[in-house]
Length: 294
Image (cartoon, rainbow, N blue to C red; front, side, top):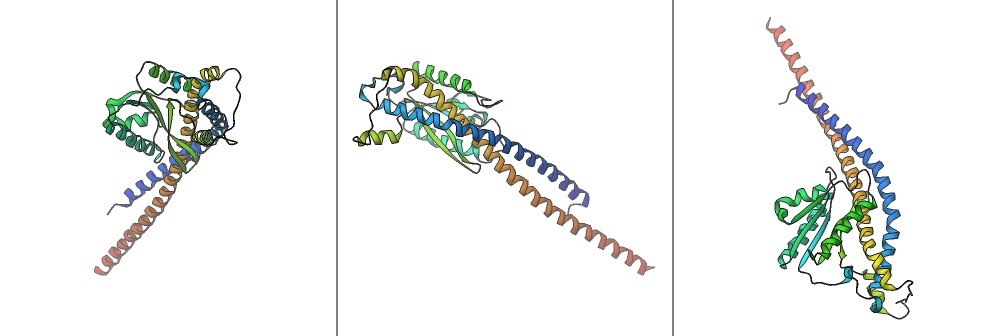
């Protein structure tokens, strides 16, 4: 049975941990507010650009842009987006679990797979099983805050790899933010550009639903300008979604940890009081027994 000193020391240790988790929860809550505002502001632009390009890509007279060409699916590049830090619940593990399933399926189909990790945790969790497939790790994309310039650099690197024939299909895996307690892992094909399912359905429906737009300048010029930029925009949106999901998951995890620490403190306090009462009772019995023995 632990002594009173040991129990008191453990209570003190749990209280210190509770203070840390409470502080981390408050910091994450402040960061989440900013990250959520950034996601809400970026979504309309990214979604509308996706709609415009989807409409253009489905038109026969739009020409063939390199980023629209199907070159086979033998070589795949996976852009895996995770956090650089832990202590955020199942955020990183959920993304990596989905990535493992996707990688396993590609390898079973006999395809060559390369992994570009954006965030250290994805690399750390995949290094043992798929370390030879990881070509590089990009860190600190959200420090001091997410920027479009960093997304452009990632997009340019992916584009160069595609032009050099290093892969045929590029898929990005990240967490889409819904709320502080809800995030969904999403796969998005970046290259070749895949029109949105809604636009495909509208195009196939035709008639009044399949609206026809006239573009100026020419459709080829618009695709030439917007397709590379769309790649950077979608990557930037995914980084913002991931950042908001990370902060929300960390806030929830630290809130649970703080609550669990409080319950443990109460439990240890009860044990301390019972042990102390038992010690006092035993000392009283010893005093009474000694007095009666005289």
